[in-house]
Length: 175
Image (cartoon, rainbow, N blue to C red; front, side, top):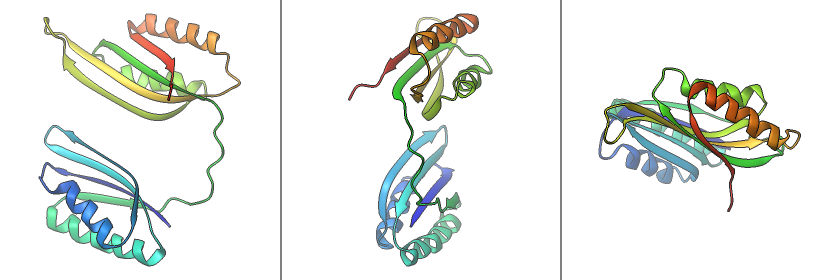
């Protein structure tokens, strides 16, 4: 049985350690974990696996952690049915531009309008070195369907970037 966990709270030294300890104590296995600091908050999400009894114990333990540490924890039991097989080519897409209100949303809409799956995305705003202009950069991992013509997509994406004054790199992921 799978359990997806999201947690958000103020920065505490033992925030993620408490979550990981609870997973171990309940004899669940960690399949994936991510954590990041967002100013004064810490966000984490985990995907764990265990039998129904172990997962139920973990859910109870998480309720205690939530109250004790004054954090927000949400859980979801995703189906273990095999996900439809995704076909396509994994690509990395990075953008950088002057910080505007809708850059990330515009890029995400461009991708989803073309049925391109967004596997991962991140973005951040920072001050440009040498000048005090706010810059926004994004990183996406996308899965481009095999039915899309890559040359046409690249051309369309570059036109899109020119329209929004975005510098971008779209390249296949090599492993």
